[in-house]
Length: 371
Image 1 (cartoon, one colour):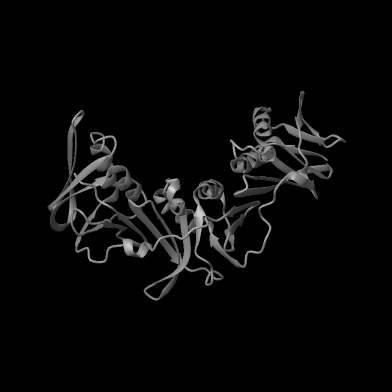
Image 2 (cartoon, one colour):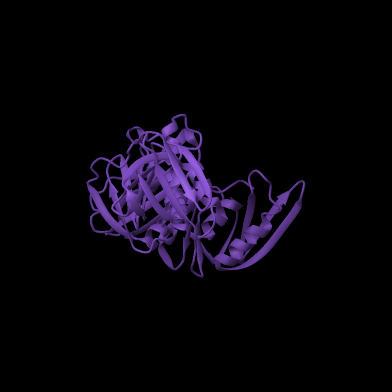
């Protein structure tokens, strides 16, 4: 194998795929990137056995072939090579060593056999549909902050994606919860997703996918089975195992009888929470919300730091005191893009619904704190 590629292209592709490399693995091959050079294309693949990232990039192929090389080391080498340089990679006759040349720099890397590299992307995935890149970005952004990080409840460590119905309209719905808050986002059900299984997208895959689709311009193809998911866009393919578990009945968490409704400017609301929470207790980050007719007072107290209050104008006419975790509140309000943040409350001990007053696609539920 022998090929030449410009440094910028190789660096970008290595930066994308190395995210799937497990840094603390005990299986040497999982530290490597699989390089396949043929037909003027270099294909790079990495995997941690749960997720696989594959990217194709144009290259000048002198001798087609394949090998695996240490991903992190190769990335560090290419990163430190001069800008605008051409990189030549050559596998020796034994197949055990690859040279990396650019200008006067010459590195030799130990390689492992291609046959040892596991391939995750095989197998039938019967459900197939496409989403615009903007829709997928919104789906992830509106829900991922509510994913749990507790390994004991592993089935909450991701986004639950499924086909559902809302007022007779079929929708693709994403839900995430950690038991303290819940985020739900939905969009019209794309063609081909009607019979999709309900799946839980793992937290790590969601994070890496979100980075990769940041600049994706076209529609993103999604293939699904009961155990795997594959996202295909531009020259990148992300394949992942799904979380093998049952997502809880989230509908029961969404309160139906809340009767106190207020609206507040989300940017002003979020900024006020941020300021007042400076004084809040470090563990609970508790902020008290006092409703008094047309005014909301946010307050926080700490034995060490003191106290803080801030008043906001609201649309509403209720009187009530309720406490929330400030960071959880800001996570939600940061997702509201319109001019109105609507809070639907019941009492100080019941969950509150938070929505964008002008966009029904998102719904958030937040459990209160005692203050």
